[in-house]
Length: 224
Ligand code: SAM
Image 1 (cartoon, rainbow, N blue to C red):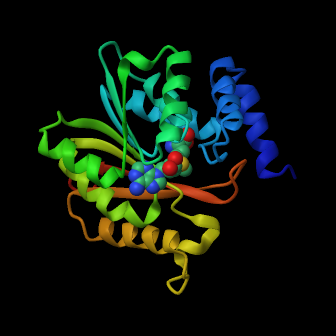
Image 2: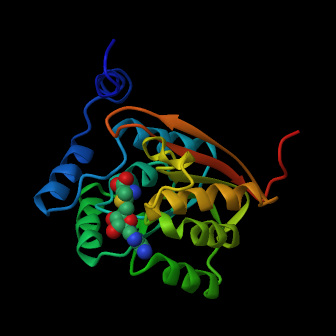
């Protein structure tokens, strides 16, 4: 039986193919000393497909790193679409800016540097136009705050995706001291108690190990 990683190689070869722009972005991230914690190619393609299926014209991303997932998402935008991406680390954001420029996407992406909770507050205060799609992939202890901000910034019916919600299975361990695990558990609790969100979570294996993503619709009543 092939490993999860080998299956990812197969999926990439069959369904994604070579992508010099994304390969260059990952090489630039590595050269600049960024951690290799981007989504996998198959996950990036999934985000791209979800945004296109949703017909997203305005995308919010929390957690830019070097812009790898940003490139996948920005490629999903139609003419005139916008992507707002939030990153704490100024060096990471600078690398992302260069990667987005090299990808020919700088004209449709607005990177913001600083703690995402502060940037989200500023976007809400400024009356930012509603988003159609929100991808959350930053510090996990803030996930409940990101959910709350997303519900204020997203239009009813918007797609929400939270990454890394399984954490090698640790998510079911209420006694786990890792704040990332507890932040993820708090996110599940908040969504379970939130009538404006209908959600599921899917486990994943592959190049990034055993993890998963949570997929939700904002502002929609639960399915019967
Ligand atoms: N989405 C990226 C990708 O797939 O290419 C990976 C994002 S990485 C897993 C998480 C990012 O969130 C890091 O770059 C980290 O600096 C950023 N981050 C952590 N805490 C943050 C905060 N409070 N506000 C904004 N960004 C934060």
